[in-house]
Amino acid sequence: MKRYLVMAMRRPAFDEGAIAPHLAFLDELRDSGHLEMTGGFSDKSGGAYVLVNLDSLEQARAIAARDPLATLGTSGLTVYEWNTR
Image (cartoon, rainbow, N blue to C red; front, top):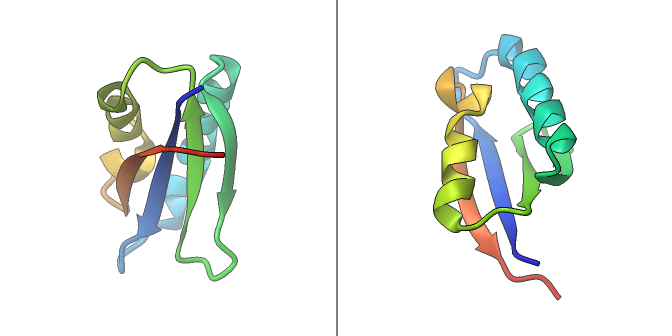
């Protein structure tokens, strides 16, 4: 199974108001079978989540682009195809 790691790193002007819509977005991904795991970093610099059951890296990037953290411009999101063992 291919996995896609989404790294969400907070920008200096991070807005805490983005957290609730972001969590709702993640819940929708989980309900659709596309979210394997998620979590924040203990230093509060950001977090990551793992997307699954997708066709391509491009699809994963399109999904991440809809994340409120990205659409509100409060975090920078980078998506990687993650080769796990």
